[in-house]
Image 1: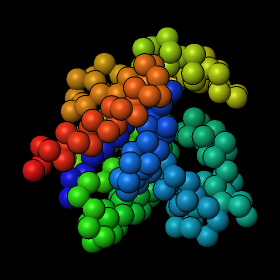
Image 2 (image 1 turned 180 degrees about the vertical axis):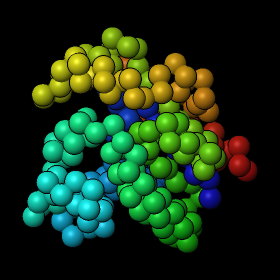
Image 3 (image 1 turned 45 degrees about the vertical axis):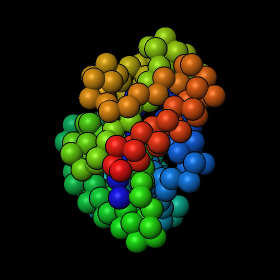
Image 4 (image 1 turned 90 degrees about the vertical axis):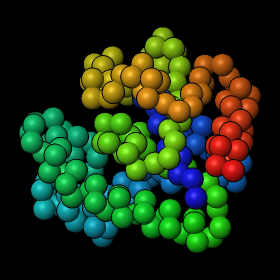
Length: 198
């Protein structure tokens, strides 16, 4: 089974593009959704966070705004959180891929926002990068509720620049060219990846 990774910086349209792959019948694993699930009450991720930052966990699970504040206040905390969460996420991804292969799929997609930042590109066959011009990205992100220029710039500073991601990509999808273009590109990529493996 071929494993495609989908990645892209904030505001590039990655979630929408992942949905397009799913609509084409490709099984999709979502790193962010997996972390959200592990942060729910009673889940191992929430239990691990509770040991590190007790006040960031309540009866509903991890309070992400309190966790963010704690991370901003302590420069060492993020690495310790990642040491708890990343193995759980890795196990979940491996189980997803094993299930997809067992079910006979020839291709699957893992949606990982921080693919290059975490070195995850070493564990996949091909990489699809979702991109858009910087002004389009900025307008999309700043239109989100509660988003500020400072928060946007802080997020960008933690991400591998879009230009570097594009250089490392096997395939590109420019979402500024519209939904129909993106959907067509998804279909072309699926066809090309399958053809390359034939």
